[in-house]
Length: 406
Image 1 (cartoon, rainbow, N blue to C red):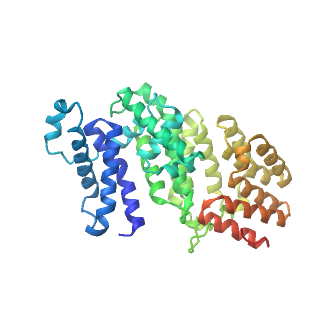
Image 2 (cartoon, rainbow, N blue to C red):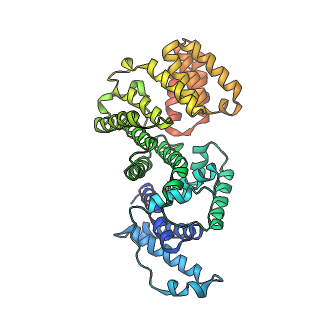
Image 3 (cartoon, rainbow, N blue to C red):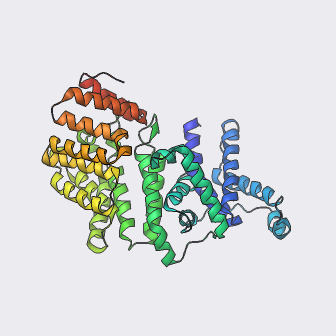
């Protein structure tokens, strides 16, 4: 098995193993330490010895033994020794384990930022560096948030069970944001040589389906699932054979996943009729407009701009601002969009340094007929991104405009 395949397998197993171990022993922090030790042991042993027939069971068994070893050294050993001395059951993952883990990580005692960081680590299997890039914060800050969150969960005495309905509703916003971030990291990896990390998008969709099955009347859960399906449907056309990125306007729409589009459109259409409208539903409606256009010139940009106006009121944020500005260019022209981009970056110094601002500015300058300035911005965006496929794409746009590469 290749190193990448082994990494993908361990990442996929990690949340299920952690759920099983937490369910058995009840201590999130110590259980995660035991699971990390089991994952490390697998990474060291499996390349030489081979992957076992049931890798999740192997990991659960090893993590359980590590946890039992630590239990035997704790001050409360006498109270727990009877349970610790029994041969551990394999502890097959149960269907609700990962959902219970999601809601545990989104405990109301935690701040929203800590909820997101902890769940990305425990359920999404992302590294601290990946979480930092997803949240646009320093890596050290993410590490501190995760450590404090685990300590806080331990202090509250939270149990590994699904919360009752009233409390479940309170935690749902953070759970959805976590699933969305996991999906985004898979759809466009924030670093490395792969544009897509299918294992993350598939995991996000799988968990969101589980959540939708449990909460079929929750409009934002349905909206998020529709958004994921409609976005992931374009994946077959987003990458060239050489791994290069293909922008939306240049994609072969015949390669889009028609079944995924149909399911997503049906889902968002139904929920918009019956549920209170939220940000994920609006984003899904925008994605549906893109996906239903058989040619780029048939895209209903005025409707997209109107929806971004609603989204900006419901959930303002830097990426919403940038995406809306692109829609402004399509409806009102590049000069109007450039003026809005200048105003947005003047109001938010942190946003001005993000590579996507330079990429959007380059696109707008190209639309405005200023190729030299556009090329400079493409090069700037290429220098700032950590994604190799995106860097190659941005450099190629600069080179096409005669601006060279950075």
